[in-house]
Length: 104
Image 1 (cartoon, helix red, strand yellow):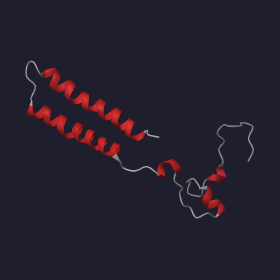
Image 2 (cartoon, helix red, strand yellow):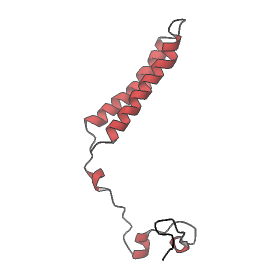
Image 3 (spheres, helix red, strand yellow):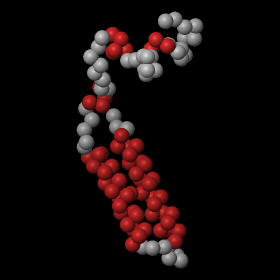
Image 4 (tube, one colour):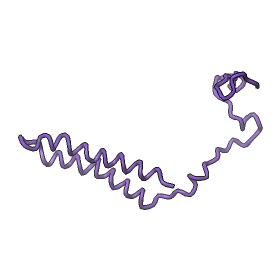
């Protein structure tokens, strides 16, 4: 198929089967339909970065809410208990998740 719009999207009706689902190239070529895995994802293991992330998840979902329940907001601690205790673990969880998943 040729297109005058090089590099842009061109709708190809023959790429869909009778049910309207996208037909894979492996189906057309008679391939076995096995999905390939990205080479960089093969050598990843659940190492100390994964356990660090698990620890931060436990802290964010168990320790911080328990601290809010055990130390109910008073007149002075209202802002601390309801704003800082949920916010700090959420920020730490976000940074740790990005750090643990974007490794070389």
